[in-house]
Length: 133
Length: 210
Image 1: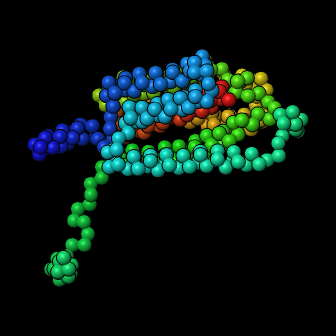
Image 2 (image 1 turned 120 degrees about the horizontal axis):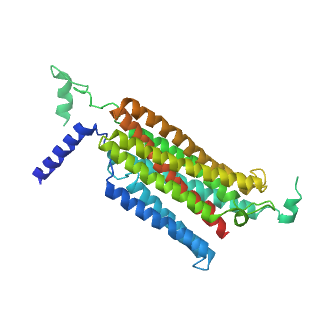
Image 3 (image 1 turned 30 degrees about the vertical axis):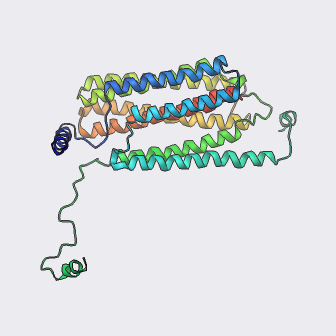
């Protein structure tokens, strides 16, 4: 156990000397290709679903392509941005989680408030709007 | 425990400071700092996405997404950005191996894909404006041009940065400072691809479903 840890430490040390390592994870040819393959598939399927209207229902299609987007963002984070819970002692992950919380509040809060605001406004038809200056 | 606390001041040589400064190599915190910048940039895009989410259905009697968007063109644009992401990855792999020529070559290819993306986007914008779908036409178009235009502006500056780094690498080689700069641009470039996932999903694909 301790021998293994020691070996790992030794490797990390060598690596640091060679590359002036900054504690940032690097990808390999394999990880970049896996990430690229996954993102091609995860991009092609939503486009195909919308262009052919395969599911026949706009609401289901919307939810499915949103799910694909979330999965693809995670794939990009892991394989291209080399995110991990350990990089920079966990601080990049903390910053990311904090940002995600803010993004969710901004998006859902704006949509929720503005939906109700629109709901309570006087109705204006498309014809009235086209007559506006 | 308390005996230790009281014992400390009576010690002949009390040490209240770190005997040795923690060793921070130059530039060791750049990655984290740059990540903080990207996260704040992410909040700018969150505000623009929220604006589009609220105003995206206000056509003011003008054209809507179904009249304007050309999905094959958007798919082509998405492919350009995806290819540029993987070629930047190859540039980073070449950098780690210390190959100056390969790094510059892959950076050049990445820049070409970036320029192709920008050209297609400008062609799309010009086409929309030619059809009368200008940013002034409706709230939907204002928020569309602001969101997609801000992303395009980021790609523009990313491309300028990329050319700058190609010159830097050519002049000084793959010194630690240049490796650090390439790593920052790598994060920036992949981050822009992540934002584009949001753009093509929420603006173009969801727009066609409205």
